[in-house]
Amino acid sequence: MAYSGIGRKVRPNGGFELAWWFFMRISGLMLVFLALGHLTITHLINSVENINYAFVASRWADPQSGWIWRLWDLTMINLAVLHGFNGLRQILWEQILSPSKRVIASTIIWGLAAVLIIGGSYSILLFQENREYIQKWKAEREAARFAQSARHIQ
Amino acid sequence: MSTAALASDMRTLKVKIKRYNPELDEAPHWEEYTTEADPLDRVLDVIQKVKWYQDETLALRRSCAHGVCGSDAMRINGVNALACKILVRNVKGDTLTLEPILGLPVIKDLIVDMKPFFDHYKSVMPFLINDEPAPTTERLQSPADRARFDETTKCILCACCTTACPPFWSDNKYVGPAAIVNAHRFIFDSRDRGAQERLDILNDAEGVWRCRTVFNCTSACPRDIKVTQAISEVKRALLGGSIEMDRDPLQIIEA
Image (tube, rainbow over all chains, first blue to last red; front, side):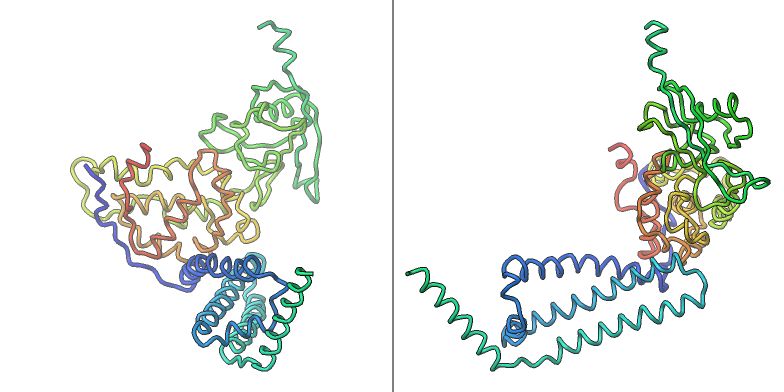
């Protein structure tokens, strides 16, 4: 006889905790790629010394690829904040058992998360780059490179 | 081998035991004993040597002493185990530290009150539920169907897993790994019809969702049950609504 599993279907359960558990799985998986990709681009491919306002601003302002970077950063910050704060909630819930204290803790946790999400999303979505500054920065960078190569020639 | 050679294998062990007598002590305290132990002695033998020859007031629970009844679960050098399944030669260092398992009220010395543990166990209805008319012979099941929940039939309810679980230490409302293992044993049994009810009970913040996949339960289990995996299978059944397996369970057991 093979493996039958007769009558082995159950109603998929829903619920708050199940939804969070599933979210943690999916967001965790996505963050592996988003955060490691971010780390590779900003710390391995580019040097930390070269990363400043102009680097980020010119990346977000790029007419072709700008939306990809904005989407990347938006997804990453929101998933990271929700994933992290829900993890914090679950750890705190082991220590905070009284319902009234849990209400206070929830308010603090999700208040903080809301500040970070709103602040982060606002910056990423409505960011307007300072073109003059970027131009100046690019010119300075070129000049520095030129000076460096000139030193090498000497 | 001569008797002399055997005698030289004897080790002097310092045995540190967390003692608590509710009639005399306000709080648990440590007491130390020194005893000779053979490398092939079990930790249980060492404790009984202390109890029989040094301090008869020491209280512990043990019954079969062969790793089947599960009554001598305790924290041995900081790790939950059955005292009858750990040999002295596997004890690192010269000190043997013994404590009652954590997260349950201590009655005396190494004995804890198991009632909260069994209350959680009972809450998942660990018995066959099937209202269909019973056949004239047995309720038949294929070897593969039996293999689906083979892992979780091995539980002896010693509480090593539940009391090794950090979420359970701080939150005793959490149903605990042992109860989930025993729910798994019936949820995935093709003869049982109570899967839905058990899953409804476990779909709770204090049910499977308190599990943080710490894996302490899996490493503590004296029966080598893959406890964390069983819990994850229940979580996946809650999400997907299926308690079938995508592979033939018999092949997994044979592999």
